[in-house]
Length: 241
Ligand code: NAD
Image (cartoon, rainbow, N blue to C red; front, side, top):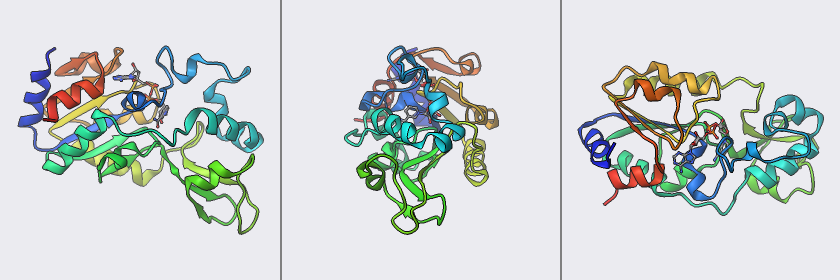
């Protein structure tokens, strides 16, 4: 489908909700999990990212977890791309009510979006598992090995949802509300393979469903518009001057 179709949909929409994932940030230099050159295609010894990024593994091997986390998950120099900027611009114009993201990289906020619903948390928030003291990302990055609490010596963990852990009820409720209230849902840069996050799109009951993803997703067959191309290109062509 051609770009004017997306532009047309966006221009007639009053309450757009965006639902996205790791593919939104690949053009900022952060690899996703499931593309050919994503993290899942690499090896970390015998361990898959899904194992390393699980609650059980974090508790039993925090040292290996943090080595992987610093090497493969955190990209402190990453900057927002055209997709993040276009979504921030739509919010500024009053046409977009929320960005619901599975990403933990903070790039939507860096681009200027205010209503960002982070289903899987954020690498910028960390806390001590013993006393609850809060830490920024720098505490995790500068630690030699496992970051510990300066207050009580407890293990500091990222405020991100690890595999085996449930999503936060209040965050899910906000996401469902934004998806339900939308007249247009744009799904982008997500394989829709990670549940329960991917299941939230079933709450959409508006007019237009646009999917922008390099590879096919299960939502393609119910979409009004499907674009199998770069999300930064598609969104910036449709929104930015
Ligand atoms: P995923 O890796 O399963 O899927 C990414 C999808 O994006 C793929 O279908 C791919 O074809 C598509 N894609 C990649 N680059 C694209 C581009 N430039 N334009 C359009 N489409 C593109 O990602 P997911 O569905 O978000 O699930 C992975 C899980 O991993 C999520 O839970 C997420 O929290 C986490 N994760 C987050 C980050 C991040 O914060 N940036 C990075 C990696 C993984």
